[in-house]
Amino acid sequence: MKRILLLTIVLFLFIQINAIGQNAWINEIHYDNGGTDANEMIEVVIENPATYVLSDFSVTLYNGNDGSNYDTKTLDVFTVGATIGDFTFYYFYYPSNGIQNGSPDGMSLDYQGSVVEGQFLSYEGVMNATGGPANGLTSVDIGVEEGSTTLDSESLQLSGTGVQYNEFIWVDPATATAGELNNNQEFGTYVPDPEPTNYPTDFIAEANVLNIDITWADAIADQLPAGYLILASDEDNITAPVDGTPVLDDPVLSDGTAALNIDFGVETCSFLNLLASTTYYFEIYPYSNYGEFIDYKTDGTAPAADATTAGITIINSENFEDGLGTWTQYSVTGDQIWYQDSYGGENYAKMTGYDGGSNVNEDWLISPSLNLDLYDDEIFTFISAMNYSGNVLEVLYSDNYDGVSDPNAAVWILLEAELSAGSWAWTASGDVDLSGIIGANIYLAYKYTSSDSESSTWEIDNILITGLPDVGIDNPISNNGEINIYPNPAFDEVNISMQKEDVYKLEVYSVNGELVRSALVDGSIFKTDISDLTKGIYFVRISSINSKNVSIKKLIIL
Image (tube, rainbow, N blue to C red; front, side, top):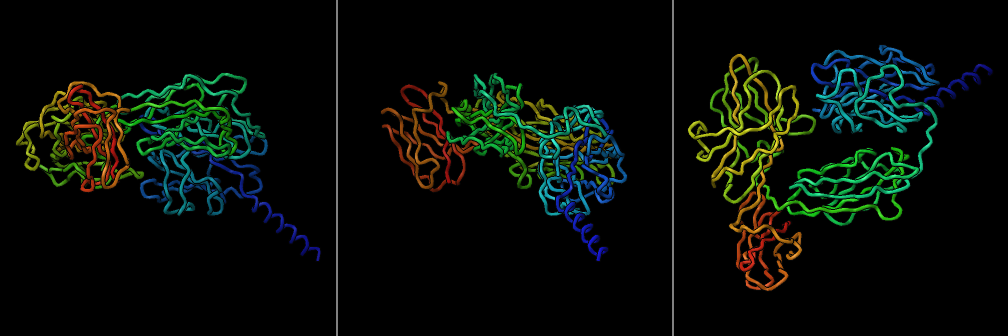
């Protein structure tokens, strides 16, 4: 009887220990640096490790391209580091390029084949696992990353004070501390800071063509913020955040809403690639602490600002979400061609002359016909990535290409653009100036060439061509408040009212610059049937025949 009772107590204690869960987490990561990757490493912290069998813990690596797991190591092969109180560090150095470079990629900390709660992590984006212990789970992006400017002596680390994973925060690359406490990390009972005392001042939003730059002066008081949450919307309807519920970064404002977390002391941020002729609204909320302890200052009135982007039209944009989209490939020489590829959930156009070896190729990726006579100040931007040795990609334009024949039959002129230097580094082209190009049938193109000894790989994405529509009126755009469009969004018909009686020339353009409606209006109101137009974004421009003023308004057709 005593033996049975003793066995029952032991089993009960064992069940209780395992029911509580494992207080263990991934504490430090190094996966990428400038040049050849070196010192790639993962560090794990375990509380009271003597109560476990180390081999029951493992770290599994995941490929963000397809979600599969590509490496697993149990913690008994990790090096034992320092012990701080009840916590012990374990770290493992992987071989060069042993940890994939992301966009995104991920890892999980597992116990007896199951992911430790909250420990399926990723960097450079979110991914879904299709294998391994995290199969079917969605990762949590740690929010910081490494790249070409990271040193091989640095790492991504958790920082702060606490005794559980969610009490720390991931910070930008700092000197690596494998097997030791991270920089600015302390184990102990976490005592949250009180709410920030004051809001920041001088909160300003300023439009820079299709970008908006936000600036402010840091809050001053006894309790300073740890950071700021900047909320953005294309409507004046921003809702304050809620304590204990962190708002994650969402930098894409072109879809209507966005959010950015900015560290105290930075005092600036930007929202990029916005819609033209659109007013955006912003509010800023200082906060203390992080995670479940985040404490936003929401009493009183949060600083607010707004700004309106320039009246620029998108002439062409292509993210290669549907094959090559509006762009076409033309193969002059070789069997390889431009095609759509993807990695980490991002699609792009890709060209390589390598197929079991280098091959002779000449392949063109060509835009649709562009009528640049409709615009002024045209700008062409894109991003490129490259790897392996070979010829530099050429960026060209032509005003006499017929759109279907061998492009070598036309005259092409080289454009100056910043291109990737290699190592798959995505590089912004800078603003490629097209303003000096005149013509109603202009083509842009990327020309790829390779030889039987060298064949680089090139990738292109985020093509954007913009311009200020030129409708034959020299006077600049006037105050958009003089024009009212309703309903907006519209379905079958739309009303356009002007502030005063006059003779107006009214034109409606698609985002591709096509004139889809034109009328002369003698009066102050105009109604038109739009049921024949496809849904999307349009720009309505109204010019006064007498005053020569021009106004631009965005119209959304559903």
